[in-house]
Length: 150
Image (tube, helix red, strand yellow):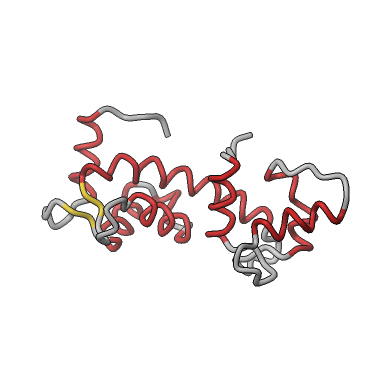
């Protein structure tokens, strides 16, 4: 999605803010995404991640000042989620080491040895659960400035 001007942001804001109270709840965001951006609606983890990241005030709502960031992040995390799904071959919402080993090039990870690959996997798997979760994948992507279109 390209940057949109302030008037267009206000128009989209009005479509998101169903109850007109000047703040967006997660329910309003989810509903608006389903109606306005149906191509994003199936990627609930991406919507949740964008919502949390855009809520810079940490009050549980998105205000108008945070809204432009939310729009950008909805599309960014949707792209990351698509990449994550390519890695997650068995669709269990997590990436095992075997799946990572087969698809790590998608993430721009080029290593020479299995030991280096395992080290990279462990760096991303921050909770050390033996799988890469979408949140961990996003944190890694932000650190590496991973671009899903590369």
